[in-house]
Structures are given as structure tokens and as C-alpha cells.
Amino acid sequence: MNLNKPLPVAARCALYAALLLALVTLCTRTQAQAPAPQLQSLLELSPTAPVTRLPAIRAWKLAQGTRVLFVENHNLAMFDLQISFAAGSNQDGDSPGLAATVLSLFNEGSALKDANALAEGFDRLGVALGNGISKEQSFFTLRSLSAPHIREPAMHLFTEMLARPGFTVEGQRRVKNELLTQLKKDHDDPHALARTLIYDELYPGQAVARSRYGTAESLERIDQAQLVNFYRRAYTAANAQIVIVGDLTLQQAQTLSRSLANALPAGPALTRPHAVAAPSTRGKTVHIEDEASHTLLMMAQNAVPTQHPDWAAIRAGNIMFSHILNGDLREDRSITYGVLSDIPNAQGPAPWVISLNTPSRYSQGALARIKALFAQYLEEGPSEIQLNDVKQHLLRALPQHTASNLEMRNELSIIGRFNQPLTFDYKNRQIQALTREQIKAAMNRHLRADGWVSVTVGPDVVQQPLPDPIAPQTVTAQSCMPANR
Image (tube, rainbow, N blue to C red; front, side, top):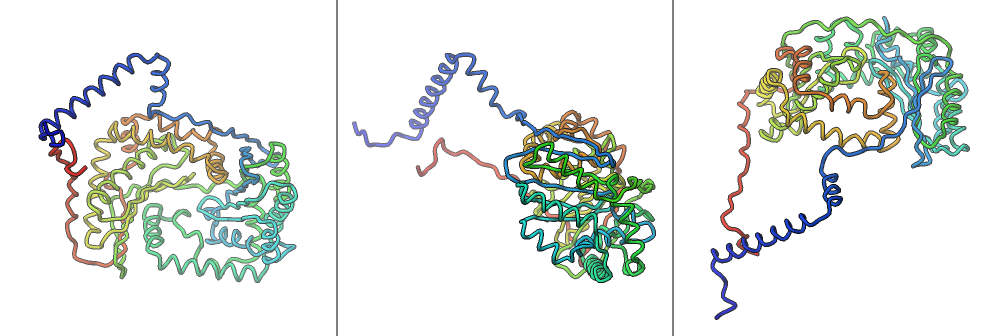
């Protein structure tokens, strides 16, 4: 008998099958003999909802009316602070660009130090600063070592910057020039152009539709008296919220927040400007001719503000529809690098905005495809599989919200701004409790298949049909083992 002669294919397959059967039988007997506690442990390792221990959130309100949120975290010898004011561009009144001008002037130094001296002071301490402005708020951030010999002088400088702004004539000239430059950049930026047209159509005549930076004419008219008056009424302690995360004790955080609030101007919190309900819009498409290799497609319709009872359902619907769009347009048809779909956190108007870049020859086909998919989505709602996938994804992503001081600071700012419960999993728990029927009903209450305002920015070219979806690859097993092993 020749032992080196290979077995025929049929014999080899039979042998492999026998060996596999023996292995399965052995594993089955071993599992059957295992004690019950070990089986229970294996069940607990199944990919269900992970258990996440979330940091505790402390909150208090100062005598001036400032709300403070704090998370104690000693993983790093640092702390992060954010102070925000209800001083966004929706408070401009008849002077568009006023809030942005005041915010930018904080970069020009204080009444005691010019911009260079203030910047050098922060640099010596290794402090990182930031600020920004939106339609609804302005904010300032500080990141510093928590050691007293660094923290105390850093907070002294930070407080001086906020409580003693310079508002010099030279500073005003520089700031206005910077804002004019930003306006020119926005005029040449396809995304800014498209967004401006969409907001004008969705919210005509409302402050939310205006540029945060005003206009060249309105900036020229803003004078010293307006700047000082805006600062005194908008940058009060009562109009502020403070968020602190990091290597501080509760007592240290309370002392720090109290000192900062004590230095700010006294006065009441500002009332929110009255927002007119968004008009019911029929579908409208505007094209902006632009010499580019691709076309930007942006479309939007009014959704709901963050504090609305249906916000969680609309947010979950947005997440699932974003996956549908990326699966169809990016993965199946390969006509875009990705589709962005977002609803901003807002107390006032909050549009659902979808945007993508695509070859210009497919722009109208992509627009029609998105509308068709959305109409089907409103009619059918999400599937159970889609909803369960989103719920599992959000559960596994939850630890990211507390993975760093910066992540926690950002989450706390939203929790405080919208007066949400003091827990990092509040929004997640809302979505976990939703059914597909509730999401479908909420979507149909607030959104319409023909409600999209669409803008295309790109060259006007002959349109072509969208590519057919890529057929999924199939694998055919011709043998029980690879040919070369």
C-alpha cells in the first residue's frame, strides 16, 4: 500500500466531514458537562448593551443667576472650562454683526493689557484658549493645568479678559476688517452660499437667516456706544452658563465659578428673540453656476428645536436616513465620497440639512433619488433592523461622550443649555425607548416629501442617469478545501 498516494477528492471530503463531526460531538459533550455558572458567564458576554459607568454631574446656581455644571475627573492634572452667553447673532437687533464684533474684540486685549501682553501671559502658563459665536450664543473656553500656581493666575487673566474688555478704536478697526474678510470668503464659498439661500427661503425676515457677521454696511455703522451697551446687557452673570470638567474638587470648582461670575456685569438674562414659525414651503430648487469639477448639492427643510418632545424621534430618523443615503449613493452607486445629514442643536429654528458633492452630470439624478428615498421613508418608516442597529450603535458609542474632558465639556454645555436631566445618557435613553411607529409618526408630523429647499452649486452640464447599483459579489464553493494549501 502506497501511503504517500493522495486520497481521491471524494475520500478527502468524507474524511474532513468525519473529523468535523467528531469535533462537534466532542464540543457538544464538553458543553453539556460544563457547570451552570460557566454557561451563565458565557451568556453575559453576548453582544448586548454594554454597561457603562457614567461620571456624576454636579450642578448649582450662583446668586447672580449663573448656572454651573461640574464633573470631577482626576485622570489628568488639568481642567477644562467653558463659559457661554445667550449673546449670539440673534441678539443683533437692527445692527447685524454687532454680537460678532463684540465677541471678536475680546481677542484685542483688555483695559489693562493689550492683545500681545494678554496672549504672552496665557502662553507663559501653557493655557489653551478658544471662543466662537453662533446664531444663539457666544462662548469662551480655557484649558489649563490644575496646579494652583498655574490655575490661579490663568483664571485671573481669563477673568480680566471677560470682565475688562478694551474696546479700543484700533481694535475695532482690526475686528471690522477681519469680519469684512470673512464676509468675502463666505461669498466665494459654495457651502456658505447654499446655506444662505436655504435659510432665506426657510426663514424669510428672521434673524436666523442673516449672516452672523452682518453686512459691510451694518458693520460700518456700529459705534463705540453700541458695543459697550451690548457688552453690558449680554455679558452679564445672569446671562451666562459655566461648565467645568477636570482635576478640581467640588469646593475648588465652586470657588472658581463664583469668582468668575462676581467679576461680570450685573443685570438680567436676555430674553430670546421671538421666532416666527417657519412658513410651509413647497419644493424649490435653485442653481448657482460655478466653475468646478463637481457640484455641491444641499437641501433642507425645517425640523424641530432640541427641546421639542419629538426631537429624539426626529434625530433617530435622521441617523437612519443618513445610513440609507450613504448606502445607496456612496456604497451602491459610488457617486459621492459621503452624504452629510444633520439637524443642529437649537432653541429656535433647526433645519434638517443634507449635503454632498457629486459629479455634475449626476446632480439632478442625485437630487431626485434623495427625494424618492425620503418619500418612501416617510411612507414606510424605518425597519426594525435599522432601528435596532441604531440603538446598539448609540449604546456602544456612549462611552465616547465621557472619554475625555473635552467630550464631557461639550456634552455638559448641551445639557445645561437645554435644561436636560443631569446624566450623560439622557438622549440615548430617549432613543432606546422609541418604536419604529413613533419615529414614523413624528417624521410625518413635521416633515414633508415635497418640503425640501434645494440648492446646487456647480457647472450646468448635460445630465446623465445615475449608475446602476453595484451588484453584490457572490462566492461559489467548488471544493471543500482551497486548491493550494
